[in-house]
Image (cartoon, rainbow, N blue to C red):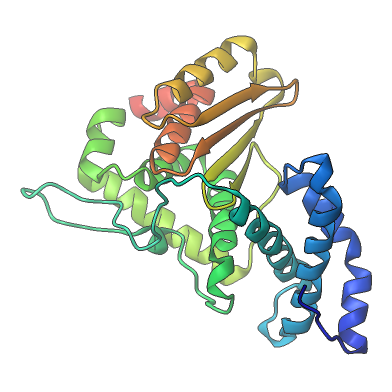
Length: 279
């Protein structure tokens, strides 16, 4: 056990934000009943570490920083327990690779989800990516969101235009450039995620999870269509379940997750995509 010594101000931060630990465990973690007390203790340890290391001059909310420290402490626990090995996306891996007869215009995961602050420890980079993907899913337009997801799925610009929209590579390139600029503006303005149709999470080192909220749009027919899209992805480890409020998908971490999510987004917004392609 690591003990953290706090001064009076730091202890007040812990006391004022104790409920944040239980909120995050309820919303972000799938905890076995036998592990609940241990996970709560780990969350409190993360909160204490956040209070001890928080730098108010960075002009960020303590709750934002503390959330990442709390979840990181919990996920480190599950990382030790989890023996599954899977391919993970590198934030420096190229996601746009044009063919030899076209201009090579490579972009990376890090560029699309660019971090302009760089003040978090490496161990919480995953939480930064999670936040930015949620911004991408809920703050961009349907068209922008789909193009960005296909790029994260490691499809090159030419294939995105040809296979999905019958549009030129140069047009797709301009759209991707606009998406990057928009995400960078979100960073500069400090715009945070809002509760929207999607809720994306990274579960430990090995799984992605997305919850799709849609009310009446999530019919049994739509659920069947989404389930077929998930079933046809190339990764074997996956799970889909439906509740009256949402559809939840958990899949092993792989770039195909984002291409799958783009296809689901197109299925959920068929009319909008039809009008866009016709125009």
